[in-house]
Length: 205
Image (cartoon, rainbow, N blue to C red; front, side, top):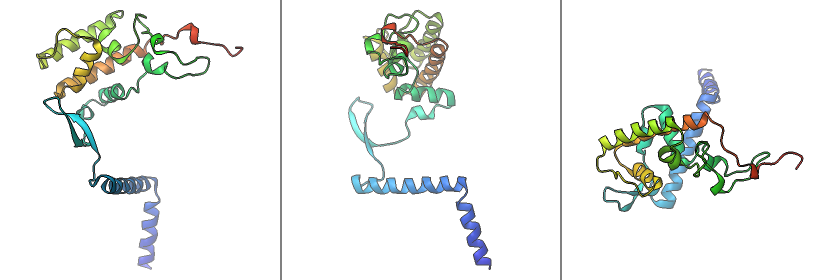
């Protein structure tokens, strides 16, 4: 009777949502590690990353430093920046939606200056039409140059400088970039995105 009662309690425990998720995660991890071992002969998937000399080397997947940013909101912001999972025009207007066609890249203009494509680099480092952005950028650059004096003071473009910041291996720079991304995304979220009239239509059309 005791053995039967123990079995019933075990089944009831495992059938609860909490333990079901735990069991599912364990089974998924086990199957994934088995697949990696069969395919690659290792329990981790190799990936490319630049070392201190700038050379591309193969190394297993690991916890990236941007995932160690201590403030959750900043960590989410820099993750959205890296994955292009944000609400800037360059991504939002990439896809069609109701009453709006897909907008060509050259027409995904910044909602503030409307002179350049509303890309990640333009929003974080380029747009001068919004004073609030200029203040955030000035504070960011001052902090970053204090941390890494060797960073270039004259940029070839905002794209190359943002790429240099992303590839910087100094954690304090990554943490500061995460805060900038969070603040800039908040400024852009407070204003409606620019949608060119040429790519809008009504239900009658």
